[in-house]
Length: 301
Image 1 (cartoon, helix red, strand yellow):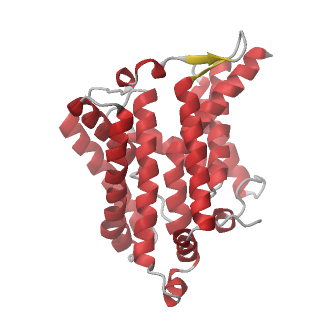
Image 2 (spheres, rainbow, N blue to C red):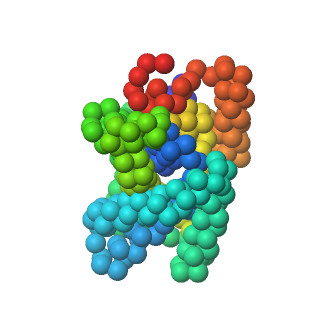
Image 3 (tube, one colour):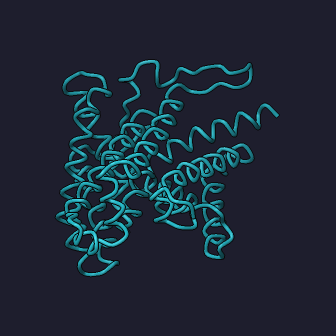
């Protein structure tokens, strides 16, 4: 029984990481209706940016994060203005293809710059990478895993507060519903979408930090991160912020339990749960996230 409880707890903490990497993807999908296939590659960009600053200036990765987050925000702003906005005028499919091409370009540029070697920020965070707290004789939790989980909850909660209680949040919600009508009441829809993309990419910066601290990464590590993020978003409901956390936890717990059954069952279990939820959602049998915009706006469904 204790083993089972431990697996559930470890899976939930892993789900916090998945929710963090899925947060920006869910936010952009809910606000702009765009599936950003470059999301995973941009997570890796943030990880390499953190590593570069940390190594060059010999500072803590947490201090480097203070520089990386504004950088990622600027990338998001430019990405929306230069790529997503222009490609969006040509139809719904073109932005998806544009971000797919961007992901390929980013991956290869990172490979050209940093090579194929795997990297990690674990050596730069001292004991945080391996220290844990013992809850019982049989259950302990990693300090870094708890920190990432709390960060995911804080980011998702912060975004929900932003959307529900600020002028920018109201502008983002209005733009998400109808950008043309939002323009008639004085909202600059172009600027609002660019700011929303900037916010989404700041969460990507945090996800890059989590990736770099908890595991190794390389220039082509973006694709698995995109898959995990997409699965968490679909399970939790596309555009649903708190649903993203639920989706991440469901994915993490299923993977952990799958690994307990069979060492090769880690990924298989996660993908299987994703496919079952996807089929259930298509049949209107999955209860989480039935209405994207209502959940994004914090209204009852």
